[in-house]
Length: 295
Length: 317
Image (cartoon, rainbow over all chains, first blue to last red; front, side, top):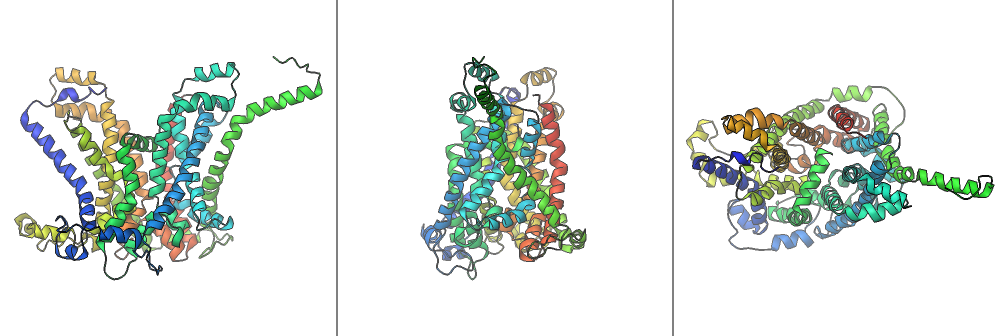
C-alpha cells in the first residue's frame, strides 16, 4: 500500500534538496503564527510597541497569561474583570455532557442502521447525513425561539441540547461506517444463541468499538469546544463559552489593545484541543477525515 | 418454538406482545434521534422558510405576505457585497487549499525522512478554532505593529522588486484596506485548512496501487509524467471530496470573518453568513435574515445532495 509512489524516489541530489527545501519553507510558514502567538504572549506591552513581532522576548513575563486567565475584562458590559477562566469552565461544562450523550446515541443509531435494518433505513440515514451539512444559519431563529420557550435560553443546558442535536448526524455516521464492517455472522450467531438486542450491543459490538469511540469523542470534543456560532447566538454574559469570551475580549475592548493578553487568551482557548491533537493526533486526523469525507 | 398453546388467550397475547416489542425495539432505539433530527433540522428549516415569507422584524410574525423579504434581500447592496465576497473567498480558498494541500502531499510522499515530524506541523492549525485563528491573524496582520513593521525591520521596503511593483512604503495594510481585507480572510482560512487537504491527498496517494506506477516506470515515464498522467487522474475521488468539504466550509464560514475583521472595514468582508446574523439580530430584519439563510441552504443543497445521493447509491445493502 505504502509502496505507491515511494518507488519513484528521485535519485539525484538536487531534487532531494529542492524537496526538503520546499518542505522546510512550508513548515516554517505553518509554525510561524504559533511562534508569534507564544512569543507575543510572553512579552510586556512596552516591548510589543517597540520591538518586532518575530523578536524573542527580552524579558519573559507571564503577566499577560495571568491577566488573561483571571483579570481581563471580557466584553464592553463587564465591569469587574474576572478573566476568561469562568468561560473556560463553561466550555467544559458544555462539552463533557454533549460529547457523552451524542456519542452514546450515535453508537446506538449506528448499531440499528447496520445490524437491525428495516425498510427505509437508507432514507433515514440519508436525512441524518444531510443534517451534517446544513448551514446552521437556517436553524438559528427557530432554535433561539424554542430555547426561549423551553426556558433554556442563555444556559449551558441549552447549548448542550443544541450540540447533541447537531452532532447526531456525525456520530451516527461514524458508528454506522464502523459497524458496517463488523461481521454480521457474529451478530447472527449471538441471536441464535438467544442474545437480545441490547445484549448483542453490550457484549459483542461495544467491546470492539474502542477505536471509533475515541475518534468520535475527539471529533465531537474539538467541534463543540471550537464552536462559536451557537455560543454567540444562544448565550451571553457569564454563560458564554470560551470562544465567545475570547472574541469579546479581542473585538470589543476599548482603549489600548493588549495584544499580549489577547494572544495569551487565544492560547488558553486553544490548549484543550491542541492537547488532544498532540496526545491523540492519529485519531484526531481519522476523525477529521471520517467527518469530512464521509464513509 | 413455544410450548404455550395458541388457544391460551393470556399466554398467546403476552408472547406476541413481547415478540412485537422485540421487533420494534431497534426502531424504538433509533426513534428519539430521528425525531430530534426531524424537528430540529427539517422542522426548523420549514420554520425558517415560513418566516422568510412573513414581515418579521425583531420578533417572528406569522402572517404570510409573499416574497417581500426576498425582494428586499435582492435589493440590498450589502447582499451583493456578501455574494461577491463569497465568490472571491470561496474560489481562492478552494484553489489555494487544493494546490497547497496537493503539493505538500506529493512532497511528503517522496520517502521523506522527517515525515512524522512534518505532517503534524502542517495539520495542527485544524485543531484550532476559527476564533483563535482569526484572533491570531488579526495580530500578525496589524498594519502598524505586526507584519508591516516586521517587514520594514527586515529591510523589505528597500527591496528593488517590491518598489518596482509600486509597494514603496511596504505598509502591510491589507487588513484595514477595503479592497484587500477579504484576501486576509483567504490567507487565514488557507493557513488553517490546507494541512487537512494535504492529509486527504496523502491518504489518496497511499491508496494507489504501486504496480501501475512500476509499470509506467519500466516504460520509461518520468516522474512528472507519471504524476500528471497517472497519479493525479487516479486521485479524482479525493478531489471531489476535497471540493465538497471546502465548498461547504466556505459557505458556512462565519467565525473566521467575525474574529479577523468583524465583517469590516465597513462591510468589506461581509459574507452571507455574517449578513444573515446582522440582519436577523442586529438590524431587526428577521424576514430578510431568514430569506438569506434559505439562499445559503439552497446553495449548499445544490452541492451536497447530488454527492450524498451518488455516495449512498453506490453502497449496497
